[in-house]
Amino acid sequence: MNTHPNSYPIGPYKRMEDFSDEKRQEMIQDIASFPDKLITLVERLSDDQKLWLYRTDGWTIAQVVHHCADSHINAYIRCKLCVTENTPTIKGYDEKEWALLPDANDMDLRASLYILDGIHYRWANLFLSASEHDYKKMVFHPQYRLKFSLEELLSQYAWHCNHHLAHIELAIKRNSN
Image (cartoon, rainbow, N blue to C red; front, side):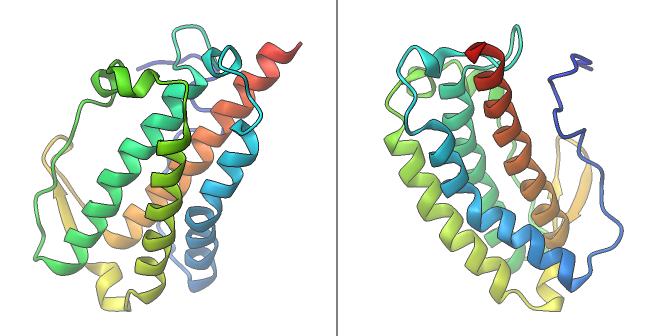
C-alpha cells in the first residue's frame, strides 16, 4: 500500500455505516458541485502548470482531470446498473494504465470537463430520484469480491470527488511556491 502522505490528502475512504437523509443530501451535493469546483481550480492553468504533480510519482493535474472523467463515467454506469438490475457484476478497469494513454495526457481538458459536467448533472439527478429501496440495491465488484449498495457507491464517489480536488489543490500549492 502506498503510504506517501499526499496519497490521501483527505484521508483514505472509510466505509460508512450511517446513511441519514442529511448525509445523503450532502454527498449528492458533493457529486453535483464537483465539475464547477474542478473548473475553478484548473481553468486558468497553463499547459506547463497542468503537468504539475501533487506528489513525486503521482499523476499530473491533467491526468487527474482525465482520470475523473474516466472514473465517473464508469461509476455513473455502475449506479445505473445497480438501480436497474438484480445485483449485477460490474466491470473493473486498470486506472493506472488508462492514465498512461495519450488521451489522459492531453493538455486540453475541455472534453473531460464537458464529460464531467454532463455526467455529474445526470448522476446527481439519479441519486435524487432514487427510492429507499433503490439505495439498498447492490452491485458485485469481482476485483474486491464485495457487494456495494447504491448508497455506498454514492459515499465512495462523493469521497472520490473531494479526494481528487484535494490532489489538484496540493499540486497547485506545492508548485506555486
